[in-house]
Length: 351
Image (tube, rainbow, N blue to C red; front, side, top):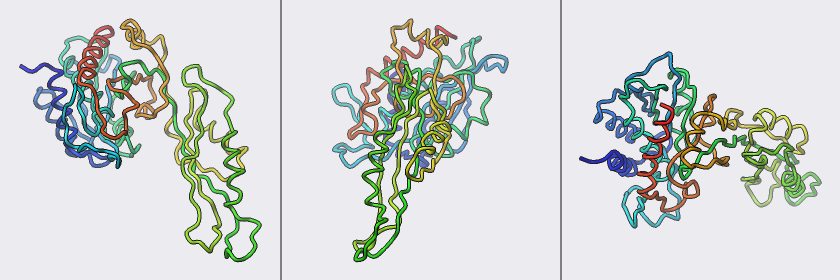
């Protein structure tokens, strides 16, 4: 009989072979549903989100959410291997989504399956394999949360090398505009917005937020896109910028917007205030259990579905975040096996 980890790796094989770009996760949703059917676990489906409750679910008990995503980004042009052809080399399972976040997803599914019929757990368990994480879409975890019972704490499965990411930076993306005067290139123009760009880029480079987090460090502001003009003989009316701001746990996203708009030499409009930073106390039983297992804590600079949660949450999973979105993405098979074992031991300490 196959072990639980062998079954989880087989599931990951199948998920890699099914295209599941954000918003197009129907086939992977079906395959995940098949896992639960094969293990006689009732499940529900909302859009491309698959979720299930432990057998002894009790509304009077606190609830622990196990969540990871089954959508992927599109493969980049540097791939030399077929991103949808899972294969193993030297103990590595290659394929798009293997590391981000397939390894964590199948490990959490295996964890839930292991504890599904525990007779009297201290926590209820909900597993949610969700969609549209990579695009922060409207039909992912955020759309599912109103359907679920109150969540008291969550484990969000992302590649952390099974270390404890006890905090995560939030995100505010700004659309910026440098205004000027459009004109024919042959005529004088003292209000060319492109010529204002160097001074404004220097201002953005020097701008900083005062508060520095012990866990997440400083707020990080990065200009990621600049665009202007559409033909050689026309001075454009505007230069457009996109600015990515990674927010620590010392600020709310609204505070970030207020502070930068107050001083900015250009027009800055935030796209959303919904992706706030998140954290969990070092004194939470889940974190204490992880520390007892020799895990270390850190603050994560990358964004996940933690930003959608209002409860304490811990980011934890097999795989390495530095492999995410890279060409020829892979995860070590041993990372999945050890991840499942650690997940099970961790929950055993609190359940």
